[in-house]
Image (cartoon, rainbow, N blue to C red; front, side, top):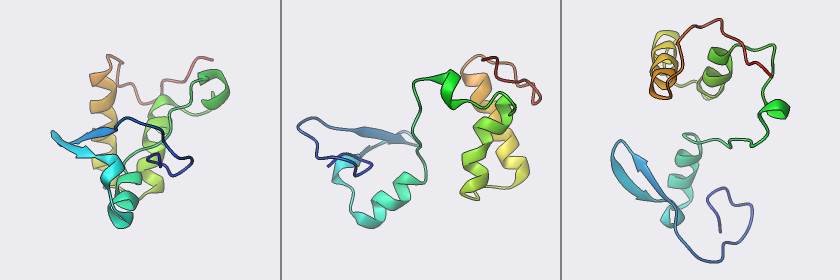
Length: 99
């Protein structure tokens, strides 16, 4: 089974690095898998169809943190700024997706 449980896998492995430690995703048990799923999300391949141009880049990135009630408003803001820095984007909170 794949890590989202959508289909049976054929072969291979999925390794997720959680705070620098490798995790065998396909070996996770039910409760561990549920906890793991809170930390991931699908990344859609069509940005023009999946990104809302009315939302700021900050809002798009922070949305899963808000939905899953992860951290405070301040820690979410810090996390989003750090993620944007890591991928070389300015951390301007009001920047919009240009689709």
